[in-house]
Image 1 (cartoon, one colour):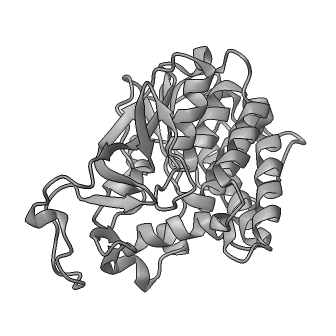
Image 2 (cartoon, one colour):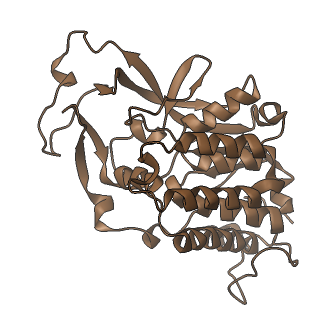
Length: 324
């Protein structure tokens, strides 16, 4: 039975990045197994970075979430022995993800996803590397206390790029547009042999590229009116001192970009995946987080599917005061 402070329709927000996004996959699978009251009234789902992959499957083919999990494990099995992880010459990381999405998404996925799937990304624009530079386009030192002001031009191989602003995409003209948008949301254009995905003639990259300050991983979506559901892990679970460090990043062309250490770590985690045992833990923890949520609101459906609850009893809501 729904309560007054969690009433349909529902909007789901998935915002973990890199392979931490497997926690969101655990949440999604738990809702599929035990949360029909939520899924049956879900009007929108948002994803950023790797979580956009989970959100896309959730919005168009939720019955294939388990296949997505095993497909990601297969990609990790390919990456793990490589000397330079996902950026090893000859390994097409984006191509592997594209093949997985092509296998999972139904033919009408773009129709199912339009106005239901919300993806956050950063706009990327090709730039003329021979155009005159301003003081903000050049290296301003290596001290993290020096903050840059505005977009910077940087070179990757034979091309030069300018970072745009954070953008939200929720309309998809074709299945190909949908796939490219999802891939673009996790793309980092720092490697010469990687071509950035494009949608409607615009190149896009990971939303982390437009984030310069340290932040908790939270991304705000412009959802339609409804109850927002955010099933989040305990932020202390993976917090370390590196997450509180503000740093500058200097690329191989000597041009400096401000980006938080946490974002650098998450991007690196996506290129060099952790051991599979860790990823299995992320998935299981996400499943348990969703179990707690469903138990709290008295809408957990007990059955023989998936993981059993880890606890014998959970806190449950009885009044609005219990939520404060």
